[in-house]
Image (cartoon, rainbow, N blue to C red; front, side, top):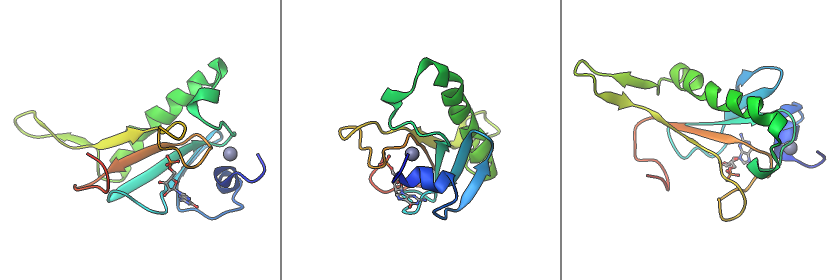
Length: 123
Ligand code: 5GP
Ligand code: ZN
């Protein structure tokens, strides 16, 4: 897609702090982090919103979600269970769709937020 910022990041035409890459996905640090850890996971192919994802994209969507715990682990925000079995730390995964969903960049992306709170504008 011409003139899509995240397509340009995927094509390395716009720089980004990349933390993960494979044939289908790219993950990079959000330029304006709302939490101590704030990553974005995108498909390299252009899908404008979750609404445009097709049945054949289901595996790709699953790969995006499945990447979250791996990146959370690498960035020190994975869920860790204490001696009493209670969970600590953790992270949030979020996909905004459309204006009412808070989407600003129209190339599908999943946010991963983590780290000590408070986080900007979120509970
Ligand atoms: P949305 O509101 O569309 O779900 O989120 C878009 C996100 O992209 C925002 O958190 C914003 O900070 C981030 N963002 C916008 N432009 C850039 C950029 O050029 N580079 C990076 N790394 N993140 C960006
Ligand atoms: Zn795009």
